[in-house]
Structure formats: structure tokens, C-alpha cells
Image 1 (cartoon, rainbow, N blue to C red):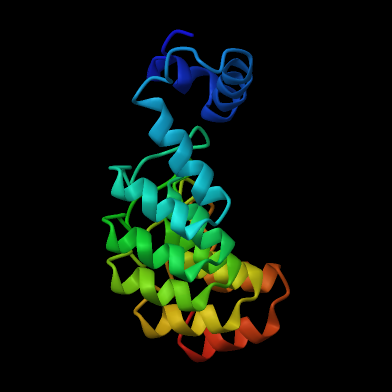
Image 2 (spheres, one colour):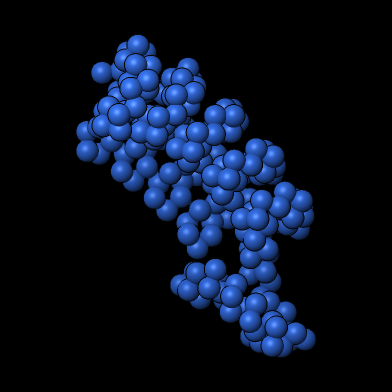
Length: 197
């Protein structure tokens, strides 16, 4: 089996490459090892997606880049946040994962935490330097996502940490507008009482 250059992996996607490599490895078990650049990335993201904290720790100890991006444009930190795995989030941050990185649609890990209602994780991310008012490719902030989803505790946390109440997305909608259009009355009340317009 020949080594698979990263430029090819980038074109076909790591998930597809993993299937191809797996099938090839089964048919030629004693063949040439997988390209040294590919194996660690596949192993690292495999462990991350399985929420295997020990596996991630092992891959990091072998030199896996905690800020690597997969074929979906997401970092390991984003996957850990979305799954709600606080231990994995902390491990990645302690290993150098950056809380300010954006995925393929411009979301930071904090925006994902806000959308998923991961308040404890959001606090960790903010302490680790996550930009609280970062906007994604549509101009949405963590506060807007939390308001849209009706995540009251998250909205309170973001307000307490200094989120801009009146920031608007690229269509002109604020967090208050998102809460109103999503019929999240309790969030509308929280935002209004905090001074949102």
C-alpha cells in the first residue's frame, strides 16, 4: 500500500480515507505502514469522536496537534463541547487547544456550547480565552444562539460575562429578536431586564 498524501486526504475527506485505509489494511495486513502524517490524525479524531478520554490523552502524548481540523472543518474541542464531555474539554485545553478557533461555518467552541446549553463548559471556555462576542459567518454570537434555543442559564452566564446585548447578526437581528421569533418568553424577559433593545 502506498502512503496517502495529506492533499488527497483533504480532497476526499478523512472519513472516506479512513474507510479506504481500513479496507486496504484488512486485505494487506502486512503492507507498508500508513503515511506517518495520516495515522495520528485518524487515531486522534477517532478517539475524540468516541469520547475516549484515555485514547485522546495517549494520542496527545504521541504528539497529536490539539488544534488539528478534520474534514468537516471542526477541531477536537468543538466535538468535545458538542458531546458535553467536560473532562475531554479540559484535557484538550490543558494540552494547548485554542478556545478562539473557528470551524468551517465560523462558530467558536463557545458558540457551540451556547447552542447546546453547556453552561459549565462555557465557563471553562471563557476562562480559557474564548471570545464572548465572536460572530460566525452569519454574524451570530453565542448569546444569539443561546437566546434562540431558549437556554436561560446560558443567557444569564453570557450576560454576566459581558456579552454584547445589542449586537446584531448580518440580517440585523439581535439576541432579543432571536428569542422573540423563537417564542422563548423567559429569555425575552431576561434580556429585556438586562437592558437589551
